[in-house]
Length: 327
Image 1: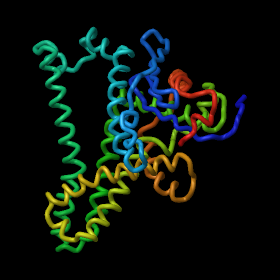
Image 2: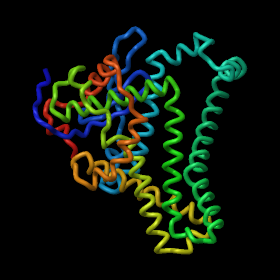
Image 3: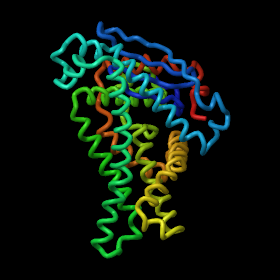
Image 4: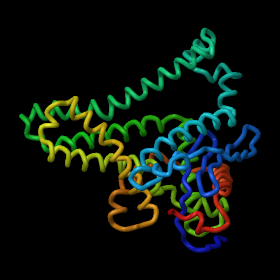
């Protein structure tokens, strides 16, 4: 039986890991991982938040950028640790058959320091690739189209570029979701959302109750990305109207959009916070693309994955629902 105690929104957020889930809430951060022996290990993580080091970084319209960077750093650390705990790293080291030919060759011919350098180069390449796909390529295509139509679509450039970014993002997610390992991460992502919804709907945190919940949550990072893309279209369109000549030089136009990013991210963060507490028509319109996208980034979890989500969630909430609410 599902026993309801009242509906309440919570500030708890999480991230899917390798065979696990990380949750952040009023009691701090905790990650629960399904170990190779089938047991669940839950470990509290100590991270000193940027806003704890400097109060101004926690102010509205400033906190968005720093919260995003902080989430990326914490998420990456937990992801790597979960890979080790779940046995994925060990499997690759002890089972050569699970490694690709390139991984085998690199492991046999180079030491750890060289491999660390390769990882750093790969990270830089990743940033360059992201810049190319989400900034340079849309601007280049918009220039080509504008020249083909003799400048007739100049006023629609921000919209065209924004739609291109959305297409690229959706295509990327669709491609990576074909991977078996990524699909399992997306299943844990679904378990995370369902667990949070179960608590917000006032139901007891049981596998049966969690399984009944929706896996589409408005405060998801996927929704955040789409909100950022929508806001970037609005702000870049406004910038183009205020300074019309800025679109004529591609380098200046791209630089201006990069400089707008902190503002875009801050507005996006505040909207997600607002969306977590409200359910009006504006929230529904802006959240719709992200919720739709979650059909790709979340999958229905198995019961054992839900168990992991419940353990991680219980570790970060208090006994008083008011303390867990979104501030």
